[in-house]
Image (cartoon, rainbow, N blue to C red):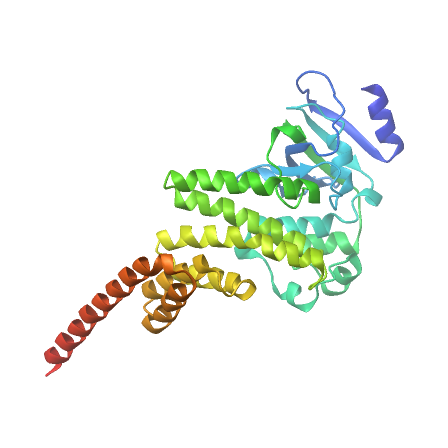
Length: 330
């Protein structure tokens, strides 16, 4: 530990342990997720508090090796044991980006208080832009104009190894993203069989999000881009089916239409969109889709006839209701 403290001191970081942690200090490899609380204070006589994460519902999360904007936090946390509380006095060269990080964290934790005017004016969000236009927070503006050492009081609440938690898609490598797709589909299918449509839809939606991230890396029209767009189809169909069973008709129309843009004769997409049009009360569009299904797959003729018959009955009921309303007006 003496060597750790000495190395920190050489780099302008002065550590003081306030509460010892559990076990021995272990090296944390990249990909570890660290949960911690932080309190940021000035080095003035009153130790003015700038931020305190304990005012929020949950601790801060940081994944090592992902180039977090405030590198000093990674440096400090790597010297801590689980449950340890320590104070780090950091020279101003290490904390120049703190106003930018603090602004982002405040926007996340207090979206209702976030000053969007500054976001609208510029998106470069560098320190120079903030110096010119401000952060929207007077205490952070002061730090931008007058950079100064800061004190971070950190508590390392929990450590998770990369293999111990489910990675969010933005953390994954492309290989990990691809390997996660069949797992999400399998989990979604199992939940669907258990009639847990909301949970099933979440799995299909996650898969679609991952595919969209992969698509954005490719040039539209290229072979890989086309392949990824086609890979979306089964997830779009499954997601649409879950939404249909939940009575969410407009998302069904939206997602099945996306499928039909790639595959105009996709019978499942047409049939599900037709039923959604019925639910959204668009009989004309429903008939078009049902009739197209019948043209494409004669095996579904009976199912289509049943749906069209049901639609006609609903139209008659609606017509009677409207006649009754008109009678009541006179």
